[in-house]
Image: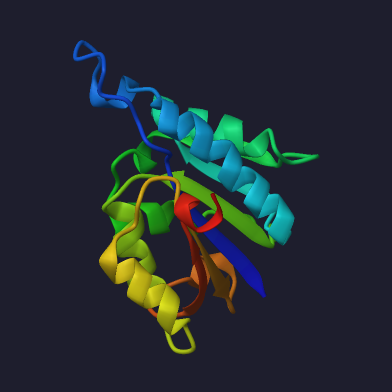
Length: 171
């Protein structure tokens, strides 16, 4: 059973209006939440074999702070096409994952991640996780999906949403 983790970047700062959206760094709240989520992933044994990360500043920082909580962080690939991507573009990148990777982490943005989870979650998904997703996919939240096929065959309703965790759930 493969695992797909989708992590929304931690809270970003709007303090410097001269920065483009792509260049915005994490806010103080994000600087606290990202390592918190990394520790929670480690505690649960949710350590990915590979990470695909939007190349924006805030997603890179989220990755660095979360992965610093793990003994042996996995290989990370920064991908421009995940930046503010729609679900189809994110899924296209996921489908390129090598078969030997049993677990994959994607760090990206909303609404793409939220829409992708809604699309992928199929029969047997956790009702509480689905209900939580319908309310909001906040910054630094992570979902875990179980994938019964190889990465290339991943499509709508072919996975099972098992968990949805926000920083408020563990703070």
